[in-house]
Image (tube, rainbow, N blue to C red; front, side):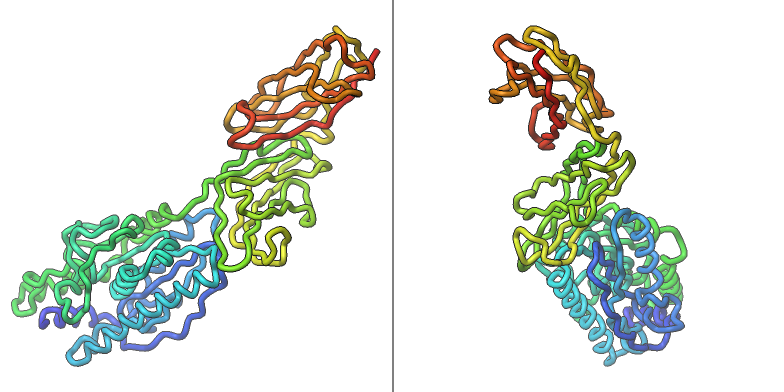
Length: 473
């Protein structure tokens, strides 16, 4: 114990006098909440790691990197408002209880915060980051919380973790390697460190520790206050512990954390086409709500808010259609798919937006019409049907247009059909069909539909052109 107290004294020598942080109010619900836990003494004004965020310089650097890389998602931060008690004088016996109270209180605050957020913000996800004592708070919280909470945590960043376990689960970063053992594990009787592996959440953990760090790579035999060499090693270890903020490691750590963020791979079929075309989007996920319903609200090119498309999410769990206005002028329009809470399964009731996905719909032409020649025909003649506006851009699978000719009076099944391939730009070549005998006494009705090659999955690509009538000559 004497060694840990001496090591702690050196760390504390550059930290400020204890001062309880002001209460921090959690932000409004959003896409992603970054929760930062400061290291020992870093909530004290004047301390080397202090900054006004309340998270400490190291965690703030990680937050800035995550936010810069989290494209398309709002990222808010919340500084865990625990004391983050400095090492001295609390670690001098019998004051060690004060330090442990700070650690235990921080764990309790974090647990309460996360439970409260999953109740109030069903679509929100989390990134947790802590330095030194703050890393221990997060580490211990993640070891005891169940999957109801941890499933919402996308990345866990531990910087100089005093509970670092050799061979633990997670991505081990820094020069200390995977054999480093945190100071808490050397003295579990006082620190109450469990020594258990992180387990199932390990794939989300990034743990940074540099060699000889007196907290996360504690070496009692070397960092020994009894010998001059040991005291020098302790000073070096303390300096290493406080040096993370000086180099590029934290920015890189934040960038790595950003790569773990959950990304819904929104895929949009037919993002462009004539006025009135319909895009089909897949790959998004609507969060569940504890009460009521989740609706998919889609708004397409040229539409006003009153023209949104609403349907229960249960019926559209694999995708959503996003229609453009029949009167939209050529141009680029923002299109949105919003997961919205509602008290009614079929009608919007003013609930909050849980998640929003955006893409661009491009209107290529207005008032699409099929070109048909000749305008009047008789059985046996060849009818030429040409592209009157395009099907729209189409990533995969390959697309076709199906042209059908019906008897204008009898209706029923097509009297003749034909297909043509559609280019990546959504255009197709003329389709020539011979009008059969025994039909068309009152003329013919010609229609065309854009479809996927297989006619159905994955895009449900039914998209008809306005029909055209060919008179009987």
